[in-house]
Length: 212
Image (cartoon, rainbow, N blue to C red; front, side, top):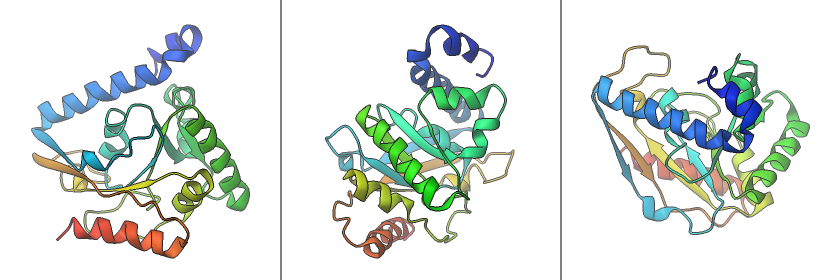
């Protein structure tokens, strides 16, 4: 991906996102065929009709960082800043419109994050965020980061919570993958953003209901 991306970085910057989507599409297809994985998506009807919104997904696997590239029209992932330093790939992530976050940057980092998300929304992008902040095991509970609520309330965006069982088939640090079905479940959008704690609790509640 990184080597071919040189062409897009020099001659076709406007097609960077399309190239990234094509690469991830083939990666997911290869994952399904080689590892005998099927993917079932539930609740697509909960996606808002307007062009921009926030997908607040559980994060159990590298799979989660790939699959949304082709599930929404123009994704913009919020990613840890360290990924920008990956040779070849890092510059392409920025060119494709992904949003780096300095997790140790405090209030200044949050302000920059919201400003970058506003640019993405103005460009009719859909924000993909993993509120747990890191990959977790399937069924494991992690404290959610409040940044998702700050972004949503500042930019007036609906939050669509998404649960998954991807960690059962592609572990957080596993090389070997396990055959089976990965379920991606979209839940009804959260539109009332007045109370931060209630929004966070609502995300967790919707996630937890999918485990029952």
